[in-house]
Image 1 (spheres, one colour):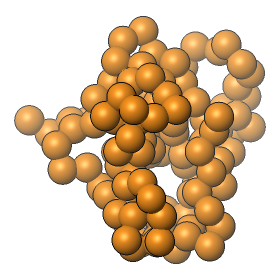
Image 2 (image 1 turned 180 degrees about the vertical axis):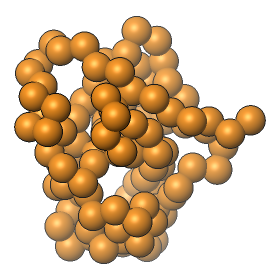
Image 3 (image 1 turned 90 degrees about the vertical axis):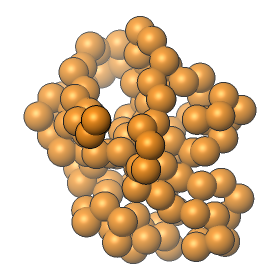
Length: 114
């Protein structure tokens, strides 16, 4: 299942990221688990009347600026996705912008501060 930020909350994602995200994300299955770094960009449930917190981590997918989106439940291993699945959102529909099809191999770069 692809996470789609609710249209009525796009302004909150834009406030946090500085980017108006396309309504939909690209799911990527990794060869290993990915863990959210300390102090990610956050959207808390009370800020939008929801029930899950959202972590947002800046990244690049094949040169396109984007964000890894992961709920706190998925990060805890209790959500819909295993930790080897990341959801990526950008200002564009990534499948179209990058000419992607199911099963394509992609390169995702994350700059983690030490």
